[in-house]
Image 1 (tube, rainbow, N blue to C red):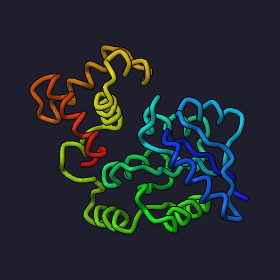
Image 2 (image 1 turned 30 degrees about the horizontal axis):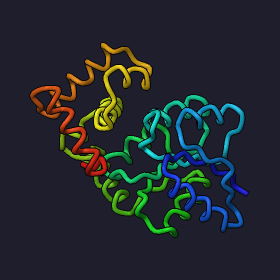
Image 3 (image 1 turned 60 degrees about the vertical axis):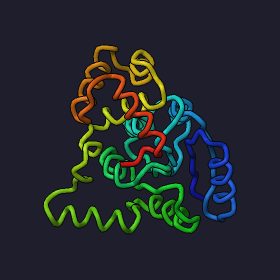
Image 4 (image 1 turned 45 degrees about the vertical axis):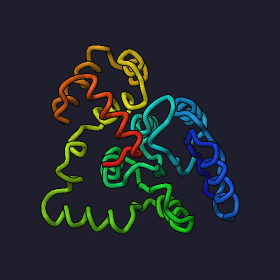
Length: 216
C-alpha cells in the first residue's frame, strides 16, 4: 500500500482525490493539507511515499513548498497537480526535484497512471509536453518558449503570482522569507522583463494573468 499525502486549498479537489485514491487497492491517502506550511510541519513527523502538490496555495507558493520539502527530504517523490499551464511550470518543477506534472483537467485514468509512475520513481508528463521537451533536447535547448513569462525566474514567478493575488510588498516579503528591499528588486525586474511602465501596470498585468488561470 503506497501512502499518499496531498496539499490543495480547494476542498472539492481534495474530496475527489480522496475518493479516487480510496477506491484503489494499492493506494492510500494518509494526509490532506489545505496549506503549505501545514504540510511542511507534517513532513517533519511522517514522510509519505508521494506528495501531491498544487501550485497555487493560500499561504506559500507551491514552488516554494516543493523547494522546502525537497530540502527536508531529498528522496521525497512529488507530483504537481494543478490548473496552471503545463508548458509554463513543468520544466520548473522537474528542475526543483518534482517527478511529474499533471493538469487538473486530465482524465481520472491519467491521474492514476501519473501517481503510479511517480511511485515507481519514473517521470510523468503529458504526451504533448514530453514531445516538446524531447524536441527541445534534440535542438540543444529545453526552453519553454521565447515569451516573457517563460524567461522569468522561479522566484520572479512567485512574486508575480503574489501580486496577482493582491499581496502587498510586506506580505510577500513575510511569506517568502525575504526582505522588503529584495521584493522591491523583484518587482523592478518584473516591470523590466514584462515591459511594463510602472507598479500600476504590473498589478494590472498580474491580476489579469491570474484571472486567465496563470497561463502563458
